[in-house]
Image 1: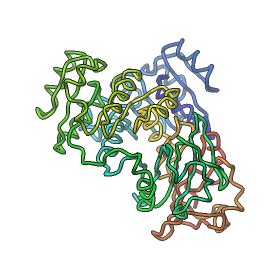
Image 2: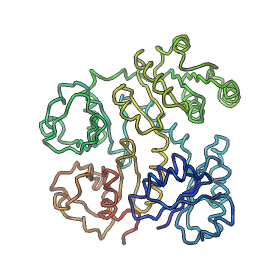
Image 3: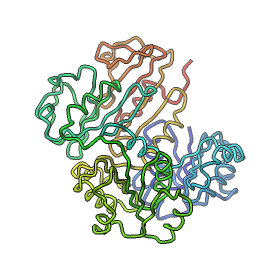
Image 4: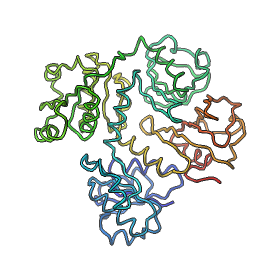
Length: 453
């Protein structure tokens, strides 16, 4: 399979990286030679220094040879033009990044008009994830799979006596839950029953949705208030802020947005409901935050274009005991900082969007893909087809690599947290945790992206 990624920014690089772990021939095009040289030092991909919006450039590459073109330049209009031309020149499928709010309500029309197969909008997807987290009644972030029946929880065990210095097999009430990974001092650990949990470990747990809430109850003395979200402060007037404030205000939530650019404040004031308060000011000014009653907020979200600002203000919100604190981060190296600061949720629009692209590329029986742990691991939901070698064989005899864990099996609407004797049958939904380095092996076992008949 040949894929052309046009735009070598953060998203283009992340998507190319994710695809390199499978049997995909990746080419990356950008009109910035310096960016491409830097990319070649990181990834083993073919790079082309050219403008993807020029017809002759695409013709020279022979679009009929490509299964997919992904346009993720900084311009929505260029992405639409590129994908439309690529399709006209013979490319099988196209994906375009379209981010502007004014286009959000006409995406289906644009897809039909310009023959775009799939549209990605990082800011809209990120706002949806934040909204889903804020509207949950419990404190920790959950990912839902198997039509909401299976959940993934991410917890900091802090100094909970139930977990700390215990071997995993010694944990009571965990017979229907599975710890698939531990994040410890920036390192990812794939545990077994004899792994000892240490103070401030982050544990990733898969289980039936109702059962996994047991962990929240066990850590309730360390968790923040679970009261209904009524007042939210957002730092930064980005597209994420727009989408999020619009959705929250329609749910009756009082929203304040602090933005340093006066013109952007005016734009937001003109396009958002008058129930959203737009404040012109420097959000890193502690006095301003206190004047705007940050301590009275039910949630604080930092979504400026600067990770440092988001982290600084999120830390201040935690110090003031704001119940839910979220920071947008783009740099993978900051994942370790989030661990230590105790911020409730760090969200990366690039990872969210890359997950969507990977799911689309694999297609077939792959229902969802979520990139985790700074993009170093993923959770994939698969509907199992007939004819696979893994069927009707005990899991312990499959010889799965250590970095691949089958976290849940949904059989005839019944959820099974598997052990070594569990078997997979045709039509089952399975939720699989995998390190990104093991994705090629995962694809070999489940033939991802192919319809097995």
